[in-house]
Image 1: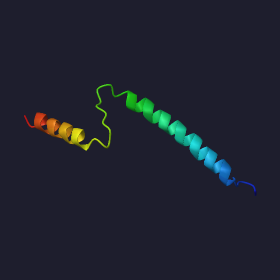
Image 2 (image 1 turned 45 degrees about the vertical axis):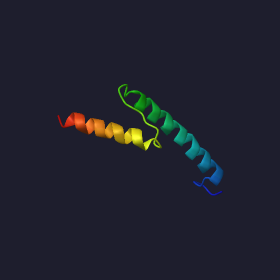
Image 3 (image 1 turned 120 degrees about the vertical axis):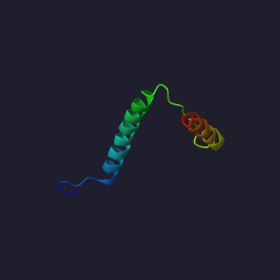
Image 4 (image 1 turned 90 degrees about the horizontal axis):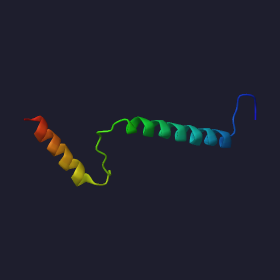
Length: 60
């Protein structure tokens, strides 16, 4: 390894570490939305129902 070069394993370890830190910051940020409604991305009917409910409410 020459000066200033990292091995693939060191790079992979850094990416994994930084990804975990980023995910933790995201979770902390999202927890600040106490009134948020969370949906399973596969539950399309609930998501569409909520969007329709919101649009009906906002058009009043």
